[in-house]
Length: 257
Image (cartoon, rainbow, N blue to C red):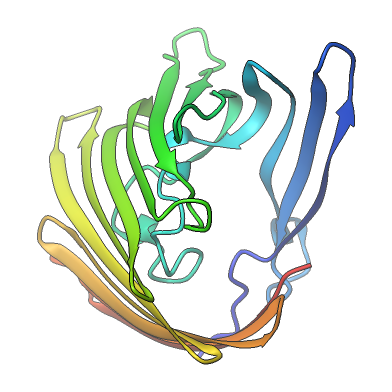
């Protein structure tokens, strides 16, 4: 048994109106683990940046999630839990020395580009690009879709295609993923399927994910205690070819402020 914090976080963010239609934006965010030892490992840096936004779009400099990571929207139903899609797939990167540019939306489409500076004389800069359509919360549009790719980010070239939409009350999501190791060239493919269904104060969730001979599935439910508070329960099981299989059963409480 284990008491675990699932990416609990705190921080501050804001904006400041400038001249010529520009707005300064900033964010400082940290992850904190209230269930672990009280030492320097208890606090970890998350997205931390300063930037400008205007009619040209938004540019951010600092530590940012890559375009490929953000392209998943809300399709990963078990994000930050044991069944987070990073369990099988490479590409869930938050990179330092990063510049990010997001275009304004045009006909529902937006483009995000991340440029990661290697900060080394012998290093090679990396790039991450994502073309996204619609609203990831499926409130302003009935469909969310994205195509993304990484070039030499954390030792991998990766590409993904995601789509999520509503059929009656059911949210359905699907994704394709490919990753290739920069050193050695090993290439692997996988896919993901997810579905949610609201039932009174409950939200029922199911997800299945693969990568070559590895796969895993998760079943769970959330129960609303208030606008920003929920109870949750889930079961996840993974089948690995080269290491012991893993199964998890969890019950928890989450509050957002």
